[in-house]
Amino acid sequence: MHHTIIPVTPFLQNCSVLWCEQTRQAVVIDPGGDIDRIEQVLEREYLILTRILLTHGHLDHVGGATALARKRAVPITGPQQEDQFWLDSLPAQSEWLGFPRCEPFLPDEWLNEGDTIRFGQEILQVRHCPGHTPGHVIFFDAGSALAVVGQ
Ligand SMILES: [Zn+2]
Image 1 (cartoon, rainbow, N blue to C red):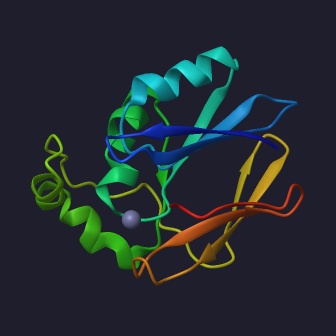
Image 2 (image 1 turned 90 degrees about the horizontal axis):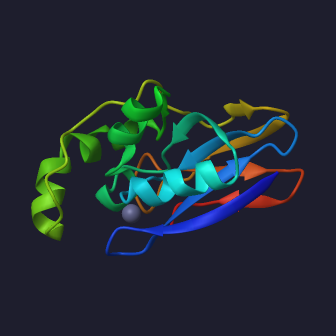
Image 3 (image 1 turned 45 degrees about the horizontal axis):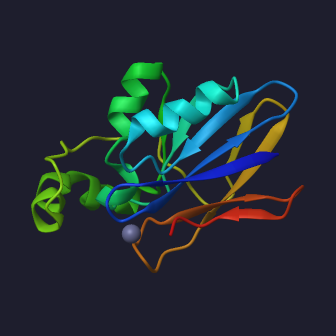
């Protein structure tokens, strides 16, 4: 599994792009903003985006998710449902942080402990890791011992 990190938003939050070398199928994890820069990486690496994954509902991790999902016609998956109150409060989070207003949204699918995400020949394992937020999930690739923990 290949991956690269793109710092996004004024907080330089770590957005990750993971892809399958054989098929070029990719996932983007935590597109908090700056989707132009994320798309530049997709184009530079000739990647086919299959889905957007979210670790938790904080604005700097999710702020670009709906725009990227619409542009690329891909689903948004995650976090775990206990973070719905964070997604519901995105307009308030925008005010607190001084970011452009972000509308609330629901993912196409919530994630749970033990779920798996497939793209190309790759499989990511989902772990529910409440603490930073109650619905926080992390993604783990056993093959390359890579964990994307959403920080
Ligand atoms: Zn956070």
